[in-house]
Image (cartoon, rainbow, N blue to C red; front, side, top):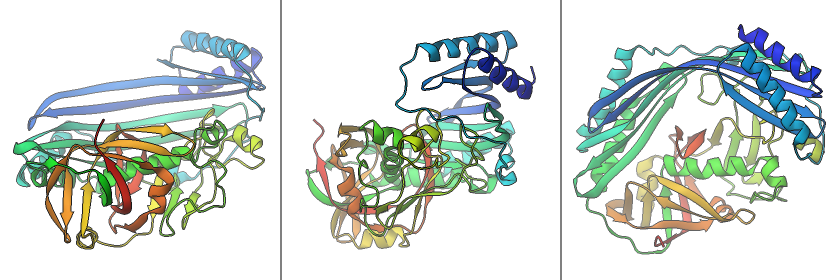
Length: 442
């Protein structure tokens, strides 16, 4: 069934069954995925996606259901299910009707930049990344390349309707060297000119070479250089903590901090889905509201939480166009400012640690921001302004607000980062953090 008509059918049927508000979002797309292992392509697979998500609200009671396939009968059954679930659901504290359209969307955001996804071009990109890593001293390289293209149809009972294209390509690779050396880096892009698999391979290979034969790291407080992969993971957490839903639920270290200093004065964080040709660009949020640029933190001061209509009503403000029908969320996090080369950042550190990657970030206390995360791949020792070998078996155990306030310097070059530990795209530089606490894994 035609996606446009299917969204109309789903919304109309939900309203006829008693919903006060309804949203239907259809996605039709194609994905090509290459998995490579030990310098060789192991799997080349292609899959097609045809799915619909249906949201229904009966005043304060809300529910959402997603199904694969666009069969009209199955969609009707899904609509009946979501309305039934809404009737049975726990009521929210407030009810806010969906924003009233129709809305006008930025034409530059509705159209995707074309990226060639020919199989031979994708294979060439993988081989270029592998060869770049090997040239830097890696011995084995593994990872995944994903190319995707598709289209979204969104319709709401508030008379919002939009159709948006998407196209993206990403590579994530891990390079290994003898003596326990390893490095990981990515390249993600929504325009062909921004995709650089060779650079990702070069950086991963260099990390692998530099981190051979690591020695046991000594716990303590260090001046730490966070690589873009690590810093992006931290900043994604800041973006999530800015969601008004998490603030209201008591799961945010930014609660009760609007207008207050939460970071270094050199730190500004923006959520900007309005940049054409970027990975997280979007013309509309899940309520159909046109997206906008939101400054979350400006020169260290928390400026706003991220809202949908419901959280905005509860906080007595307006939506920031960050729906998430239930949980507002960032689209495209950009760290502004900075300006020093990586070489200069390293040369200014007398005694420190360079953490290139991390995973398994966990909170000990969401409200205070006490957390820990495990460095992964190259952990490099910095002494007297230069790399002096590698260390292992350390954990970052500190506090989010303290870390943000202790940002001392930011790098000039920024990288778009997204992989399984960083779901929201983050444009991140290197960052120097003073007095970061490192402990032994326990």
